[in-house]
Length: 316
Image (cartoon, rainbow, N blue to C red; front, side):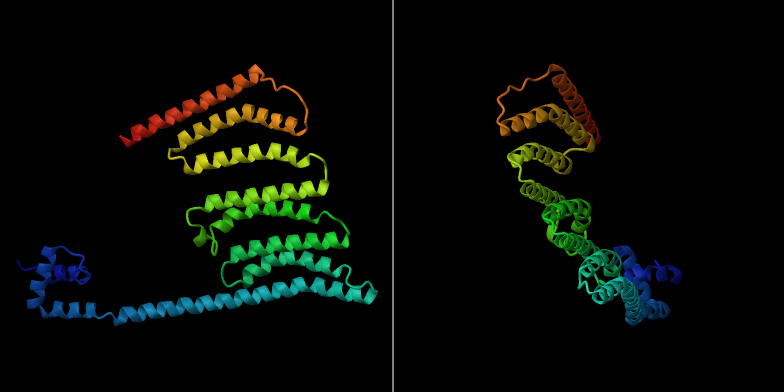
């Protein structure tokens, strides 16, 4: 069967890429044997020099534009950095001229590092901007606390630094875990890494507070409260992240677990606190609180059951 040239020419790109059917390929081959015009057109399609040239020009344009924006970004970062350096230079001159040495110089220097980390670092960093910005901001805040503590002759640095580190870890760790250069190393364990970082910095903060207050029984009392709450937080995370069920089932399980923890967990915390304080007493379970906990657990179980039934219907 003979085909018109228009039909064959429409099939030539597919034939060139081996993307047409066997019947279409045979029709194109038979037509090319007889039609010199379509054969020349097919030969021109096989010549990839033009495509390669266009691709090379595209890459050159993208590369030149990237270099242009990098130069502009570096120039803007240099200007902003020079603006931030002015107060530091003025403070240095005033300190030296007044004969006070460098008393306020380091405080001003540490304070200016904070906005510099937020504006200069993103403009100057060639890659990994978010990671470098958050890291430099955290270090600059801790450095400012250290300088203020040293010049104020205080002993509160580790308490303040650990608290700031915990707060910034809670805020920044989810973003850092999802960005380079950290993301490739974590793989599918980003959530676990974030939770582990939050937990470690939290307990570091509690240890620093205990060493600062130097109160007898602080650690036993504090960890009696903190450990059950942290364990409950981990339980919620593991349920939400790793329980092989739909969202409705996870919601029901979380409601049931929180309801039971609201009473039995609170009683366990109270028992640990009383034991750490070496007070001989008997913990009496109040029936209304038990009833509310059981009602909440029942509601959570009902929601989880509905989720299971709904999941089975969807699978069917």
